[in-house]
Amino acid sequence: MIYITIQLLLITIGATSAMTWFSYVMSKNFRELYKEPVLLSFALKKTNINLSEKSRKILGWLIHYIIGFLFVMGYHIVWVKDILPISPLSALILGVISGVIGILSWIIIFKMTNHQPPIDFKGYYIQLFFAHIIFAFTATALYYILLTL
Image (cartoon, rainbow, N blue to C red; front, side, top):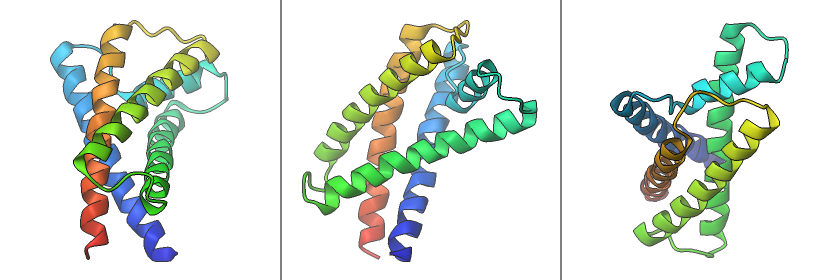
């Protein structure tokens, strides 16, 4: 059990970091705020929870990686229960599903916090969709590699 938890944590760090790197590159290329941890910290500010700016930024990053861990746990269950094989096709399927979940989640976050950042929402959601596909492919590759060790 401890080995599986460590394995899932390593996969989470790798996949979430790859996704975040992609979002930061897209943010820079399109000169838009597509950075999930930053948007999470702004959303936290809108909740009126009394936190310092530094604490909000840290919590934004922590929440981002916790959500990544939850996705990886979901993937793990799908693979262990043989719902899907560990393959590029399943990575694509999981990425598409994760992308849709991610977009719907952000729509809810923006509505719940009444936070309307000055961003191109269509561009953000398109970028977010592809970021989740990168997440899923990275998670699948790392999962496969760690299973063979």
